[in-house]
Image 1 (cartoon, one colour):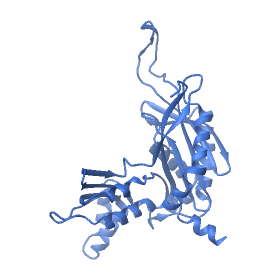
Image 2: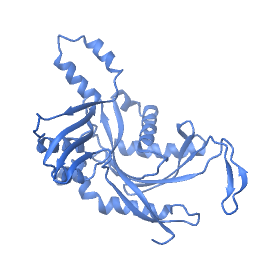
Image 3: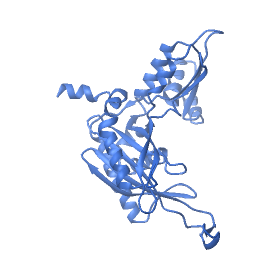
Length: 324
């Protein structure tokens, strides 16, 4: 590989609005597009006013730049870590040149691109994976804070924004290699699970008490499936659960443990995110060349992922296209 080229890991996420009462996608057209458009403008205003996001006590991040071309946003985020008083040295002589103050940090770059499907009220984000950098969860939290402040109608209708990873295609391929499935663990959204349990206990459980206790639970509930001794969980059942995972937000994660002729196989949607390794150029400062990586992101969103994504979660797009 040339010295001015490096590889960057990139992951793919879906962005959508979720009705926490009906437990369905909120699909009213254009709303998500308007939220993203307003949020990015808000980010730039915050940066210009020196108000940046602070996900932890020693990390800051902010939006340095964005551009929209048709339905695709190109984004350059900056982040920095600080809080240590360390010496900076000349690596050729090991001689200290200065001491970094507690409030000083290195300005790092992280890139993303978002393709919006306005009629479907959904979007796809391709996101540069940087260890110790900004996470998709960081962005999700700031988007929901923005909605809480500037979109009260969504809040009053119990709508929240979610950013979830898209699992890769290898899950089903490896599942079919299994001769026997020994265990499956399924993490589901707490709200529909608890509501179902409470519904089973009508006239038995004090509803006010049960909902009060629900607030003490974690956001997800883990279900464990095990077969009868020496038997196997049905592959068809796991495929059905996996397809629900791909198209709905109720199921957050699936982990399966099984056996094949080659030994034990472990599948986990958390670690099988749809990702790729891209070769990108380095700039004169030996950092990722922003123009090059964003150009590649836009290309992949437009030409590489579209058919697969249509099958995964832009499920309404083809139907609406056919009705035009």
